Length: 480
Ligand code: ADP
Ligand code: GLC
Image (cartoon, rainbow, N blue to C red; front, side):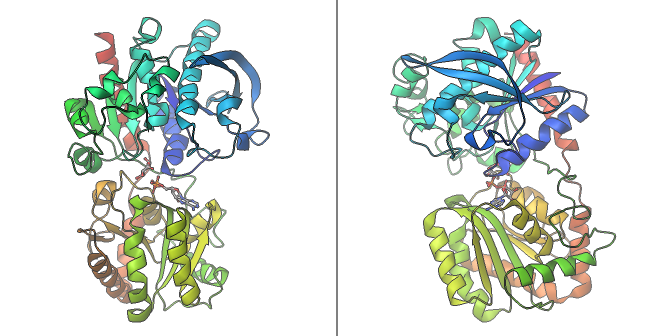
C-alpha cells in the first residue's frame, strides 16, 4: 500500500509529546510490513539548518482567506524513508509548534500544503497514495478537503484519521470556515448540537470525513463515545459505529533499549539487570543526592497539563515526604501553575524532591533508566507512552486506570505495576503505598520488574492492525 502519513510533529525532529513518538516510529513499522510510506510535516524554524533536506522539490502559493502564502517543499530522509517538509514561512517560521493565536490559519495552510504536495506527487512523481493517514486536529482538514472541495481529484483516496487526544480539537469561530475556503458559517458543526454548534471544529470535520477513525487504545476508544470523555464529540463518534477503532500504541524498542541507550551511564537488560542500580545511583548524584540504594526513587516525565493529574501529585508530596522515605524527581514542561506548585515542594525538601523544567530527552531517558517506579496519575490518558517506556526500562508504573493506562498496567506483584481507580489523592496514595510495600520485597520486586521488561510493546502488532484499518478504509473508498 502507498501511504501518506500527515503529522504536525515527528520524533526525533520536533517533539512536544507522544504524537511525535508515534509519527517517528509507526511509518518505519509499516515499511517493515512492506508498505510504501511517505511522511509530511511542517518545516518549523527549529529544523532550518538542522535537518538536511534537498530541494525545493516543489514551490507554489497556498490560498488562505483572501491571501495566498508561499510554500516550498523540501525532501529529507533516505530513499526508503522520505520525509517531506512543508516550508510555509507565514505559518511555521517560528519557535512554537502549537499555541499561537493564529493556529487555525497555520494548520489550514498545513492542510492546503498537503493537498499541493499530493498534486505534485501525482503530476511530477507519478505517485498517489492509496491511503492518507492523518493525525489529530492539525491534519484533520486533509481528509475533509479530500472528501469535499477536492473530491473530484482526491476523493478516491482512502482516509484514516487517528485521534491522539480528543481534548485538542482545533476549535475556533465560524470565520475560520472562510479562511479555509469552506464556505460561510459552520453548518457542519451546527448539526452536531450544543457545545459544538456555532464554532468551527477541525477535528469534528476530520471525524466526519475519514473512512476510518482510529484512536490510540481500545480503552480510550470505548471511553470517548461516552459524554464523560467525549469532549462534546461523543455523539459524532458514536455515529461512526464500527468505523471507530482503538489500536494500542507501541514504542520504538530500538531507540528505547536499556541495553544500548547512549543516555544511560550503564547498560542493562532483563537478562542482565544489575546495571540498573548504577543508573539509579548516577541519577541520584545528578540530582545532588548521595547514593541511596535503600531509598525508593520515583520518577515522572510529563507535559504539565490538566490531563496529567498533577493536582494529585501536588496533594500527595507532603505525605510522601513525611510518611515514606521515597525520593521523587519530576521532569516536566508546561503550565506555570504546576511548575510553581512542584517547585515549592522541591524548595521545601531539596533532599527528597527534585524538579527539572523544560524539555530534555536525555534526562527523560535517565529517569526511565534510573527510577524504581514511574507515576502517571492521569485524569484521562488516550494511550500513554511513559508507562510503556518505564516497563521497558524496569521502572514499575503506578497509574490511574484510564484509557491506555488501564489497557497496559495490571495491579500487583502478579501483574506489572500498580493501579488506582477514582481520581483522588487518597486512592493515589494507597497505590503508592502498595508499591512501596512491594518494593521492600526484593525477590518479588525483581520478578515484577522482570515481567515488565520482557513485555513486547514494539510496533509490530499495531502496524498489522493499522494495515487492517487501511484495508477497511480502502474498501469504503472504492465503493463511494
Ligand atoms: P503525551 O503525548 O500526552 O504527552 P505520552 O506518555 O504519550 O504523553 O508521551 C509523552 C512523551 O513525551 C514520552 O516520550 C515522554 O518521555 C516525553 N516527554 C514528556 N515530557 C517531556 C520532557 N519535559 N522532556 C523530555 N521528554 C518528555
Ligand atoms: C497524546 C496522548 C497520549 C498518547 C499520545 C500518542 O498526546 O495524550 O496518551 O500516548 O498522544 O498517541
